[in-house]
Length: 329
Image (cartoon, rainbow, N blue to C red; front, side):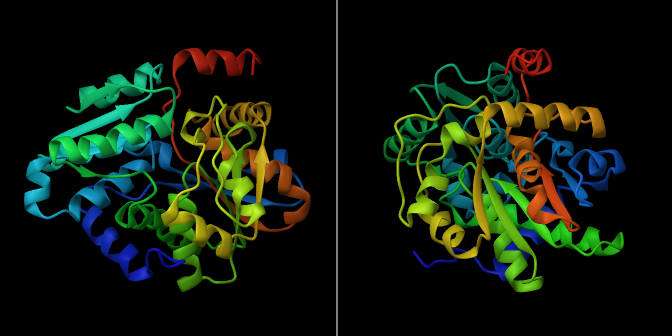
């Protein structure tokens, strides 16, 4: 696969397909958050937690579904998820009349499972983690003739994620900000590669830093090693980041395009979540503040810059939120 799986034209085409159904999400600046980060950094927050499914993954799912031919839509689609990608695909399926099957690991977030079922998806719980659930999804492709919509290894998914970066650039300019840097959390890499594609075409001077959970750091480790790696476990409460493999559609572009790639601990993610609640009063999940956690660690290196982070989702379950607020994580 080429280093860059998509082009800016792919992102523009995805934007045209999803725009009739999704309105732009806010880009906001919080003075209190700037003060907490320090180092004279101006933080711009993209609120994907305000999407209809409370996650940016709705862009990815809808971009992929709207690109399918009529016959594939009729047969139906299958996806593996820890929740947000599945809800995005399920939402798009309900909108377009496409049958949706979602594979999740055993013990998956029950509230996300309920959300997918409420949108009409068949939810199958099997396997110990996301990667096993993804294997089951590809088995169903063979057994049922479904079309797989992988959360990372799908060019239309990545193009959908790229629409988020296009919005950020447009909104930042309209608000009078000159963007210097984006700090983006990585689970599979769709939003980072989408952003890199947009930035290298429209704002090549903007640098992208990636952040992964230390307990699920396969892509980070592979990036630094120069070759893909697979880990036996993915241990993090930030379920949207809980992957243990590198992905063909995103890895090479991440290697080429990122300025740097760091990890953050679950304790650092939990502290960033508490910071987000305190300074922006927005409900966010662990994966959603991966970028903010990374920015806190990178702040001395980014002094004086205008930095965008993305609150990627707000689908945190009650038990996890309580644990974070009680400082049990």
